[in-house]
Amino acid sequence: MSYVGPDFDPPRPRRSPLRRTLTVVLAALVPGALLGWLAFETLGGADDGGPGRAAGATSSTAGSAGGDPDDKPGASTSQSPTASAPGGAGALAGKVVVIDPGHNPANFAHTAEINSKVDIGTHKKECDTTGTTTNSGYTEAAFTLDVAHRLRTLLERQGATVKLTQDADRPYGPCIDERARIGNSAPADAVVSVHADGAASGQRGFHVILPGAVHEGGADTRAIVAPSRELGELIADDFAESTDTSPSNYVGDGTGLVTREDLGGLNLSTVPKVFIECGNMRDSKDAALLTSGAWRQKAAQGISEGIVSFLRG
Ligand SMILES: [Zn+2]
Image 1 (cartoon, helix red, strand yellow):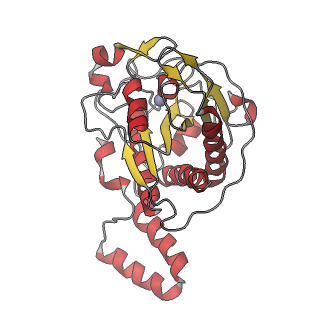
Image 2: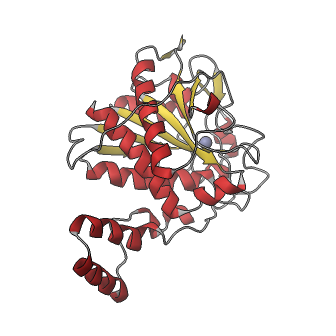
């Protein structure tokens, strides 16, 4: 399946003699910093733009009408983003970041398990969902894992300790309550759950989902509402700049920020956490971006910059 392909890890390029020659030529022509970027783009960034296909991804199991199917829409409020600062090497030494790639490529084959209910404090909810797909069958699960790998590489370069909640290394899930616990027990300084939406065609753009204040059952988000908003605002700002895409035109009133109180992954978090819906897989224009490896690199870059800004405070 595409998500275990060799295209996740730009820093370890597959070098051909031609590419080595190209790199040597470039080395003679451009200064070091620019060379690094060029080599990165040439060798790792743009060779994987085509859509992949995960086993079991069918239109009958994928997505639902409106909204990301893993968590149903809820109340929303919004604010404007703020600026960020660049990070240097080692800037995140000692920091722990948990990346939560939404869904699991194998969820499609474990319907009963992922439909079992878990307690999210406010109510019970499905363990996990399959996630959506583009109309051509590129799954959200493949997308989230790819962006997560790229993001991990970028954050590790800054010295952060990075943990993924899943890496296509388990039969299904984890369930949304376990996803939250993984961030809590890390313990993470920041958690980002990566998703792409399954909304109607014509609905475009990204949005960052912030936890609302929930204090019910096993959920108590009151301590993380403010830092999560800060994290989310920074990510939204940097994501827009890095990807040159606009905030959602269907939720968030143009701010790219939405607050929800119905997501188990947020309700059960005790550390700063946000979701990002990077675009709408069901819109052909957004899908063209989401299926591009070069664009996914920009997406990971934007998310990374927001996290770096947040953690450097
Ligand atoms: Zn999702």
